[in-house]
Length: 271
Image (cartoon, rainbow, N blue to C red; front, side, top):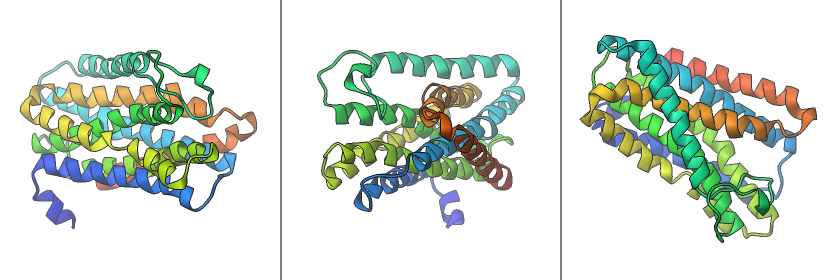
């Protein structure tokens, strides 16, 4: 299977990888067909696990290779890393300010972005969609980096990133679908809205792969940009949401460390 994927065009590789991550989001959303409520500790732990995966992926799969590529291309490594990393965070901050969205568990008066009359369900989906843009972009950039034939970019590393992003997408699909189901939405519609939050990943993945293949000189910046965007999401949203209940903080912290360890193992062993 891996040999078959290696022979494909990098853009197609990125598309298939992000379709996989979208599929895992849908699998998480499908939990609404089996239960109406999940234990709060379990939900918080899943979010913590997702945060750990994203932190590890940001360094092992994006920032570190980006720094190595910058050096290979004759750039100033630390300057490239800072510009790309902070650029990713600033981009997500602007998106956070402009795109209407609502985080799970909050009332409509807590919605962020420009004011709108959109329904609560739409705003919930948009909140997770914000998470998925940098994730899809990161996977696309990773496969585009392999196509650039730079030593620090490996097919194994790109696959590891896609697998890691897919793993942490499961709780994100659940986090969207489950609250909608509790609010009285039908199982089918709750599932549809939950999986819809992942649609943006294949789009962002293809765009990321094409972009870096056409402009290879900016590849180190693109990798660091994706890392910065993902760290923004982790610190601004995932960790605070996972630690809302004081009594669950120790468990969530261990789940976060477990997610980091799983992604580190995937990246080091496959990369």
